[in-house]
Length: 413
Image 1 (cartoon, rainbow, N blue to C red):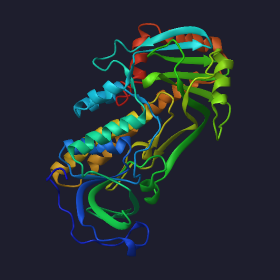
Image 2: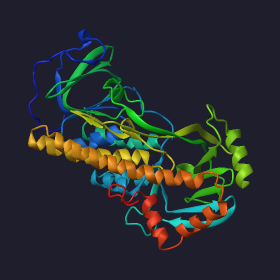
Image 3: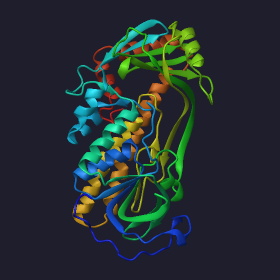
C-alpha cells in the first residue's frame, strides 16, 4: 500500500495508555503504515495523494460511507492549483471549475472599482470556483486510481494509543473492531476533531461578532464569471459565480440565525442593492458565524493536526480549505524527510509547526481585513475612498496577490 521504505515498528502491542474506549476493546494491530490519516475530506484526500506520490505507505480512515453532498467551500486559489499541478491533476479541476479573473466593488449600487487577476502569475491567473463536493469527488477518484487501498470508508475511529515509536488507532468497520499501527497519526477530521479532543489538545482563539447567511441561486445577474462585493451601509453582500450558471450570495446579518430561508436572503439583497432573486432556482441555504481558533499545539509527539482540526479562520476570502492544502503539502515533504532518515526527529516537526503557525497568522490577518471592510462603517466615505485607492494601480497589483493568497507563507501582510 505505497512505499516500502518503512522504519521499524514494534510488533508487540502495549494496551496502555489508550485514549478513547476501554483497553479491552483494542484489538491487536495487523496492519502497519508509516502514516495513518483520520478524515477523508479535501485535506485528508490531498495528503493521501501527496504521500502516495512520495512512496509513503498510508491509510485514510473516513467515518462516512459516502462522500458529503453540498457546495460548501468553493474557491481554489492559484497557489493550490500549482500544488495540484505537481500532482498532475490540476487539469481535471480546471476543466470542471469556473475561472474568476475579475471582481467588482460597489457601495450599495455605486461602483468603486474592479480588481483583475489577469496579470497574476500564469497559468493560474484566476480563482477557480468549484463546489467542494466536486473537488472531493475528483480527489477521491484520482486517489483510487493510483492506489485503491488507501481510503477506507465506514471506519469510525474510537481509540488512539500513543507509544514511543508508533501510534495505534482503533476503529469500528463493517460491524467489527479493527486497529492499525503507524509511525504518525494525522488528524484531518475537521473543526470538531475527534483526534484533537481525545488527545486533550486545546483549541484556543476567539469568536468574532460577525454573522452571515448565504445561498446558491440561479444566476440572474450580468456579471458572468466575475465576482461582486457590495459594501453596503447595512453590511456586506458578496456574490460569486458557480459552475452551471449558479451564483453564491453571502449576506452579513446583525445576529446569528439558526435557520435560513430564501426569503431572508431575497429581502436583504433587494433592500440593500435592489437586485431581485425572486423566482430564481435555489439549491443551498446556510448560516454561519466566524471564529479564529488554533490547536495548542498542532504537533504533539507523533500526532499532527491538519486543516480545520488544526486551525479555523474566517471563511470571508475563501482561504480555509486552501490553507489546509498548503499545510498538507508542507507536511508531506516533512514526513518524506523523516521516512528517508528512518528516525523520529522532533526538531523537524517543530520547524514544520512554526511555518504553519506563521501561515495561519498571515491568513487570519487577511481574513480580518476582509471582514472589517464588510462591516457597517461609521465613516463610509473614508472606507469607500480607501477601497477605491486599493483598486487602482499599482496598489491593485498587491491586492490581487493578497486575494489570491500569494505570499501567505512569507508574511506579505
